[in-house]
Length: 121
Length: 109
Image (cartoon, rainbow over all chains, first blue to last red; front, top):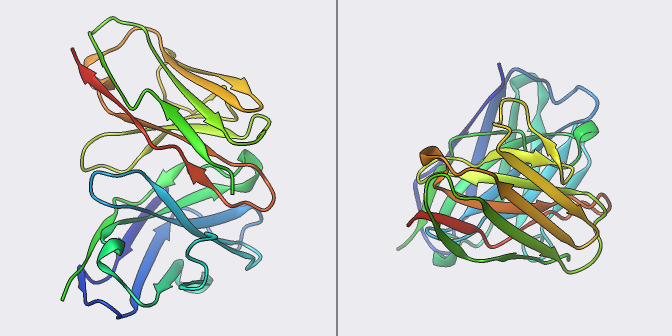
């Protein structure tokens, strides 16, 4: 049974760095073809893909946010970590992590429940 | 980056209606397209991948079609549990900079 769960602060101040952790089970990021992405959704708005890390440690970032994002993994802990620097109120959103199986294509077949991050002083 | 444009942004329909949602890519993406359903307060759920493949466990009233730049999600007979927001997502392979459409809200008429 595949599960993913996001964790991190609910509130951050402008200019601070956000660190989110995705803890998953039911699959391994050391298995060929497995990938985990971060996706966010501002309140009432559409989904936005942020970053992806692959089983072989390849990393990909949104063009518009790549200077602010870092994604990493700890395979032994079944965790993926996303950091986003210089947070701004427009970054207020629900942040999701989701799995991709590369053989299926770059689609998200399992998602976490999401964590709401509010940026405010 | 590839832009995805969905239409309409919202649609009002009744139970039993046939509903069609379209998604257009700013450049050709072959069949690298998925559709998701999202209910309020919940994570999106994968319905269709590779433009027309039904994800396991998804009812057969959902279907997808299209290739290149124009895609369609069809709900053949709308059920009460189908009132939700639907998103398309392009998954063109390299570089894999993934993008979603703006969403279509299916509302009760």
